[in-house]
Amino acid sequence: MHNKALVLFSGGQDSTTCLAWALERYTHVETIGFDYGQRHLVELACRQTVLDKFRTEYPQWGAGLGEDHMLDLRLLAQISDTAMTNDRAIVMEKNGLPNTFVPGRNLLFMTFAAAVAYRRGITVLVGGMCETDYSGYPDCRDDTLKALQVTLGLGMAQRFVIETPLMWIDKAQTWAMADKLGGDSLVDLIREDTHTCYLGDRSHKHDWGYGCGQCPACQLRAKGYGEYLDGKLMR
Ligand code: ZN
Image (tube, rainbow, N blue to C red):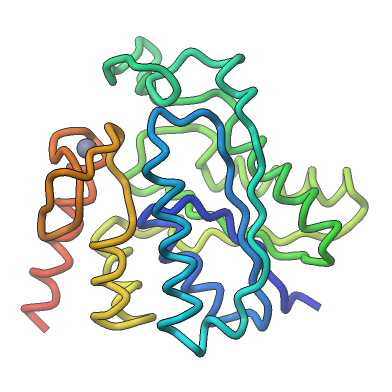
């Protein structure tokens, strides 16, 4: 019954790793992405490149990769005033959350994903949410997603399973997971074709990929990559 999955796929490192994870486990995998007026459309361009490469360069995964669904959620920009959707500096707010937090975003994403999955006969939703070295977004927490899984199941009278393979691992372990799933070629694809930088910087290339190197997302990705390489050398 649970042989089809819908992956929330943004074109970043985490969701690309989740997509490979899902393609190893489910016979049919579809993807969903959201245009919500991101400051930079870089990530949306990256997601298309990654999908194309998965189809052409990984025949074993390409065979199971189905339709891509792109939803226009630009209305999110109307109800939020954050550094993700406006040209503002990234700072910590008084409540301990960075101003990149878009209230309710992941709840909306998962709910829209469930609505699409319902129509597609898909029962498994896969997301790259993580509680380990995240920014404290409350809608990335395991409890939030478990509660949402129950809510979606009740509200649509259909059992959904929300899978979050990265929930309890850190960035170094996420790199290692990609290595395990697709070896050096998948690690190289993630370095070259996925995007994480909050500022949308594709002009500076580092060993871990493109980005400004300064923003919290770049620093997390760089640190994780360094630790992953150290771990690889010690093996
Ligand atoms: Zn950056």
